[in-house]
Length: 195
Image (cartoon, rainbow, N blue to C red; front, side):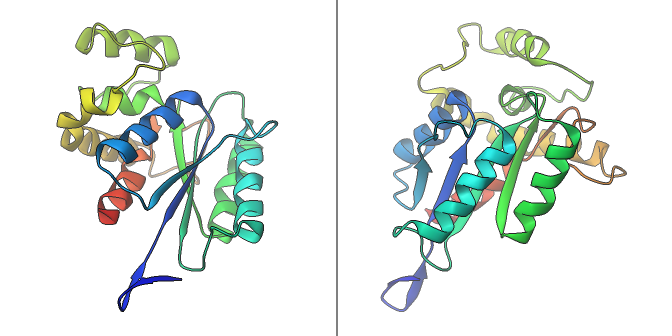
């Protein structure tokens, strides 16, 4: 564990499945100047939820930058992940102390939560269409996305919590059936503690 004086210093290591997630969290890291937020580069062949989790587990075992007491999170959406794979990742991540940051149907649902409460089943095209009604210049991979949407973060967190409440009766939140849902607000709360 790292220490600053007598106070332990924790780093959050983020593994992201998609380019939009990588860009968004890197934008937070730069905009807020959070040196203890580290975004790990995406590795070839680790584009599904279980590959991402495997990369995070290997990192925790072998990377010299990771220290006991640090936290690791994996950000992934539903994509073509099977129900079995998602359930295994949800359970396995807890076993290894990795925070699963699941989104269904897509990362863009977190962006939409900044502007409206939308609790109907949806797909990527539906979500992007709704985002564009609030941010007409939105496009995937948009630079400075965090700066554009951050002023509505309180709304996003409240709307994300309402979406989770919608799926409380399901055995697992990390599921194809939990549509729509986002757990990004949980990692955002952790990032706020790193400031």
